[in-house]
Structures are given as C-alpha cells and as structure tokens.
Image (cartoon, rainbow, N blue to C red; front, top):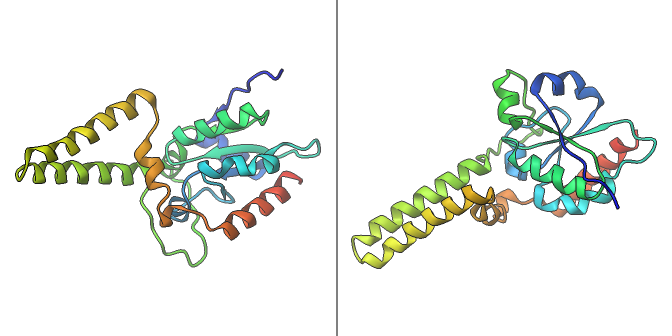
Length: 197
C-alpha cells in the first residue's frame, strides 16, 4: 500500500531558481502551449498524461525534479494528483504560466509557431457567453430556446461547485487543441531522455 504524495507548490521565484534542475511538463492543450510556455517545458496534455506515466516514473538514477504547469494551476494540481496515485512525486507552479508571465519571466514559443490559441479558460468563457446570447436571442422567437441559456448557467454553477469543466473537456477535443500522435511520441522520447539524465 502506497501513501499518497502531496504536490509541492513552487512559486515563480523558486521555479526560476531551480529551472535548470527541473523537468517541466506543461499539461495544457498544444494550442495553449504554442502560445507560450516555460523555457524547456515539454507538452503532455492533461488528457494524455496517463500515456506518459511509464516515462514519468522516476528511475533511481534520475536527479531531475518534476514540475507540472498549466495556465493557472488548476489542471497542474489535477495532474499532480494523478501522478501521486501512481507514486510519482511532482511539484506544481503556483499560478501557472499566467503567474510566470506576470512576474516578468519569458515564455518560449515553438520555432515557426505563429499559431496563437486562447487559453482554455478563455475558450470556455467565450463559448459559454456565445451560447447564452444565442439562447436569449432565439428565445425572442420561441421561449423554449431560453432553456439553452439556463442549461449553460446550470453547467457553470456545477463546474464551480465540482471544480470540473465538461465544456473544457469538449473544447479540448477540437483539432486545434489536440496533439498529433507524432508530436506526443516525440515529446515522450524527449521526456524519457530528460528523466534519465
């Protein structure tokens, strides 16, 4: 029986000081990752993290500490909880890449990556707002359409109470938010090399 590991939060100052000794895993979508990530971070989206578990298991010779990051810290906390279930110790960046950028630290972008994708939280806010407006607008034609707005409002309340987001899960399946299989394979190879150093 293993004891659960508690994720260690690192603030931006601590993470910056320790960055050369860290293996940084960014669990945001590929589109979010391309819009700017911590130097040297590797992208393993949260919904693909289980595939990376064998690679992330610490080997005895590995000295690199694992730091998991996302936009604000919520997804990285979920990732750390999943890793802890599998006996993998990891730290999380308090405030995520948003706090990193707010502290004046550089965010790196892939070479030739001019593609900019909104953060998942922004995608959710936009989609929820647009659906509410559509429901209200169509509700002028027929009152039943107002149920769309009510459904979105109920979903947002449920999301806040459970700290989950079904809309983010659905949006994460859109092509611009999905990694190509070859990209994830290359990331896992790079991750294996870093974990063995």
